[in-house]
Each structure stands twice: as structure tokens, then as C-alpha cells.
Image 1 (cartoon, rainbow, N blue to C red):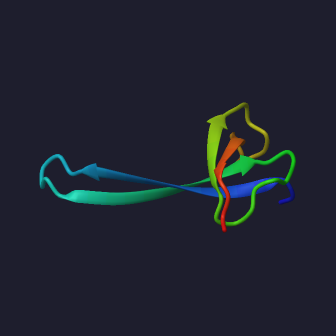
Image 2 (image 1 turned 120 degrees about the vertical axis):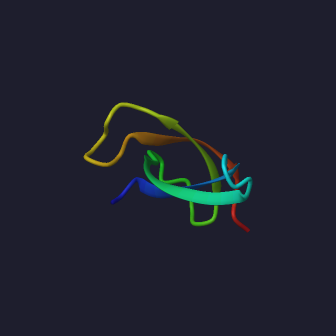
Length: 67
């Protein structure tokens, strides 16, 4: 998986019936053409055409670097 990063997206929402805050996360495989991102970076991803069986996202920009 060269040039592929697994991006975890967290979301927080209020349950419609129980009015409780629920946290969910989802993982996406994203294409990183320049191999610029590292573990812990916050990135912006965008949807693109299918690049492989599981990869339909690409890394648009790196928002913050991991320290």
C-alpha cells in the first residue's frame, strides 16, 4: 500500500430518541500521491473516482502536522 493512507474520521451526534451524545468513527483509504502525510497528521480528503477496490478518496491538503 504505497501512496495509500488510512484516514480515521470521527463524528459526534446526539441520538434522536435518547438525547445522548454518541461518538462514531469510520476509516477511509485515501490516495497520497506525494507520500507527504505521516502518522498523526490532520488531513482534508475529497472524494474521487475509484482508484482501487477500496480506495475512493484522495488527500487534498495537510491541515496540521504531527509534532
